[in-house]
Image 1 (cartoon, rainbow, N blue to C red):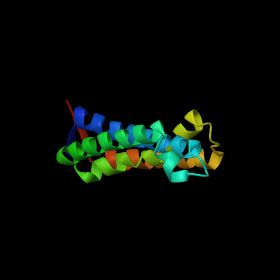
Image 2: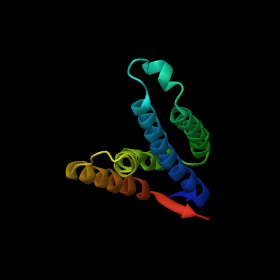
Image 3: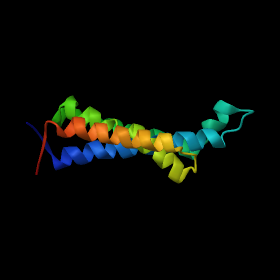
Image 4: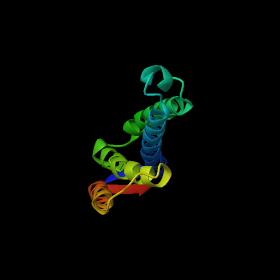
Length: 124
């Protein structure tokens, strides 16, 4: 059985939240960009830079995770971003989330949990 500390588990969950947050910022920045000057106006969007900053913090946190946890645990938990991002987009950006998408997000979550806990022991 593989042991992961609460700190490492917290870092992995931070990575999930940070990835979803980055994507929300990128989407909001892209939506606010001017179609006449897509690149130039995108580069002036504060949300773009906030997303990039969040993404950078996530990268550092992910490297710390990789130092402390096996990929067989960390990566399945990180796949929760595929569920968290569309749900967050529905809540924050008011994007439409269909019933099938919600069921898919629930299945991704269940799958990530099942794969990760099959060989996981959390230690303090």
